[in-house]
Length: 408
Image 1: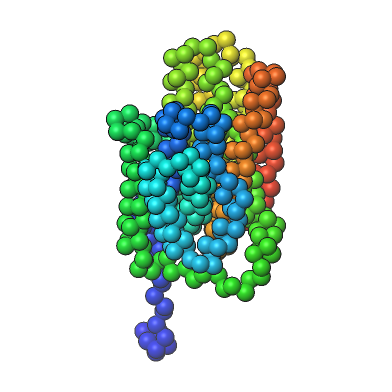
Image 2: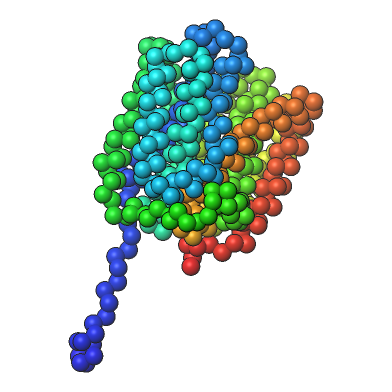
């Protein structure tokens, strides 16, 4: 052994980062509990309508007004989280959501109920900006796309669970107990995650210094950053399409039993596609390639629909394949963010932008599909899907030209 090797021993390599599965799953459950802010009003729509004796339009507003915060302040939320700290924002958002659910369980007057729903949107935004950022940080690089695929299922799982357990609570105990149960769930997740994550060394993410320019300048920078913008635009076309197809495609089938079956199964098929995309992005191909494949599959599936309408079962299967590919777009979009973002601050801003674009898509998609279906039937639906697919392919291709930071 040489003297140099004794005096200058080789540096010991740092241990490879490990995926903290328990923490990731609990953050995902927190996301599910937050998505239930939408789902609890969806499953209790008739009960809210009956209790408050208001119009269907106003009751619908109580459901949809939750998305206003994300639509208007999505990017702003990401900037705030990067300045204040992700764990602090997450805890505050979850506790705020729990408090608002407890207030709703008192069944206040309708005006106060609408106000709580509007504020609840900020709780939802805080979670969807911070939780995926922390999940990416807690995931080893070889598992990151898989973790983001899991995260992207939170919305569909929330609706499935709410349709099962939430409906049972509503039928057996009533509207007040449904809201109270949600408050207990989301508050419990805040307490559990606080004690689990507060001393986690992996999450020692320094807040961004405040001398990064004004909020408006930072927001403009986010919109100009293709690493943030392109995954969000790819996601926008997904949200334009999914809610609309889940709503209108089953109603094109005359068979009532098949229609009911599609309404139950299609959200689950979408969730499967989302997780499948995460697995493909992790082990097989880049997330951008998954998005390209998914949008191509959506287009091919849509082309078959107009000729299958007189064969209800085959039509239902074709819609299922289309929804599976749509779910894959969601998983691919989420997986793109940690693959392209250069730091946790950029990730949080990307998740804020994706929340904003997601709410935009959910706002403009359903009325657009409703109009074309009313005018042209199945051909209107297929034409709009093909247009959206074409745009999705273009922006997925542009995203594919950006070098992934995970390979650097």
